[in-house]
Amino acid sequence: MGKPLKTNGWREDSYRKAYQTVLSQPRDFSAIKRALENLRQYLAVEGRTNANCWAVDLFFMLCTGWERDWTEPELPQAFDAIFSKMGDGLHDTASAPEIAREFGCLPEQLLEELNRIPLESCS
Image (tube, rainbow, N blue to C red; front, side, top):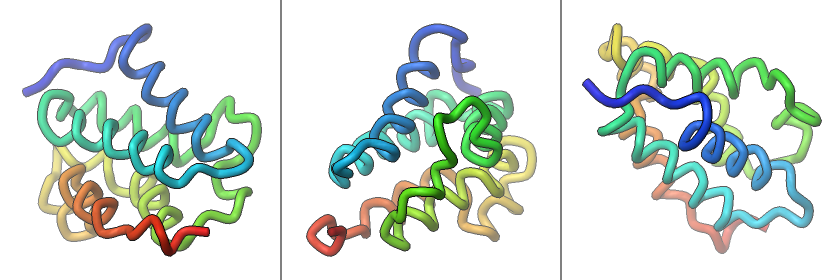
């Protein structure tokens, strides 16, 4: 039901892009939004596997290896909510989608939420 994330390549690039855009100063909210859109789009279709969803969930939940925790920079509440959900219930996407859906953590739900963020309100 989708290709697993590779050790080198897509996953590393996507994680690095999300990591770099969130922690960069000054913050570029359109770059953060694009990085998250790319990750969500992949997980919503081609990469929708239990392993991929768990990997992304753990990456954002634990912040292992991050220069600093993604929650340190003050992000607009809308972005903060998406990152929180990514590290909360995304892992249920493939194995228990009804649970992920109930908590608004399916990749397509997160993508819809992301698309509703007006960038002009992020400053």
